[in-house]
Length: 363
Image 1 (cartoon, rainbow, N blue to C red):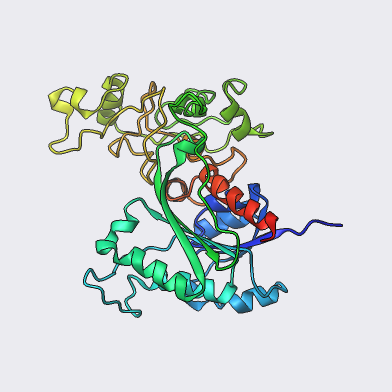
Image 2 (cartoon, rainbow, N blue to C red; image 1 turned 120 degrees about the horizontal axis):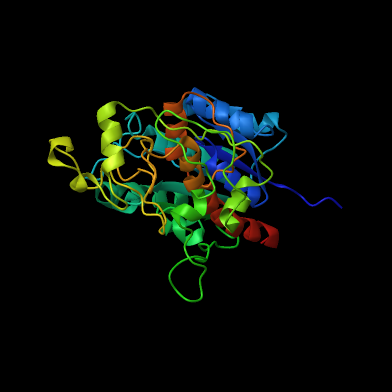
C-alpha cells in the first residue's frame, strides 16, 4: 500500500526557502504563489513538481486552483505576508493596500481548509502596532476554526550558520493534534550540538577578490555542514564577488580581522556610518542576519573574514542554507535579494517536521 503524501500551499513563496524545508520533511508543495518574476522563475527551476503561480495573490482563487489538481483541501498552508498598515487604535480597513496581503493569507486559509498552518514574520511581529496585528491574526484564525501558538525562533538554534530571529505562528484545526515548536538542537549548552559557524559553512570555497569568480571548489568538504550542503554538486555556482573602485578596494584591504569602519584611517571613513558597516564577519561564530545587501561592503557586517570583499552570492546562499545545487534566476542584485529575503530552509525543515509528525499520527 502506497503511503499517502501530504500536501502544502505556500504563499509569498519567494525563492523557495520554506518550500525546501517542507519538501525535506516529506510534505509536497503543490501550489506556490509568488508575484516577483525572478523569484517565481527560481521556484520553477528548482521545484518542477510545484504549480508556481506568478500572479498577484488578490487575483487567485485557491479553491479553484486546488480543484484543477483534484484536491478539495491541503494538509498545510504557509506564508509570511507583509503586515504594514494596521491601525494602532484598533480599527482596520480591509481595503487598505498596505495590510490587504495579511487578509489574503486568511482568505487562502478559508479557501484551502488546511489541517495546519505556518505564519512567518519579523521578530517584532507580536508587538507590531501595539499588538493589534497579532491579536487580529489570532482572532481571525479562531473565527476560521483554528487554534494558534506563537514563538520567536532563531535559525541558528536548529543548525543554520546564521543568527536569524523570526516570529512563527503555528495553527491547527480545532480537534486535531495540537502543535508544539521544534526542540532546539544547537547552542552553547552541553547537551546541544555546537552552533554551526561562518567558516563551518563557507570554509571550503576558493579565494576570490573583487570582480572575480570561481566555479571550482577549493577543497573537499571540511565539515558535516559543507558535506550536506554540497551533496553531489560538482560545479561551484554563483561564487562571485562584485567589482569595486580603487577607494573601496583600499578600504577592504585595510579592515583588520574582526574589524569595522572604526578601524579605518580617518581619511577613508565615511562622514556618517553605523559601527557595523565595512565590518568583517567573525569566522568562529554564526553570521549575523543576512540581508539583501550582503554583497555590499557598506551594508551591515558582511565583509569576508579574511578576503578583501563582501560575501559572494553562493556564500550568502550557504549561510541561508540553500543547497549548492540550487539555481537562482536573474541578475546578481536580484539573486542576492532572493537569498536575503528567504526563510532559511533548515528552520523551515525543523518546523515542517513537527507538522509532519502530527499528520502522521492521523489525529
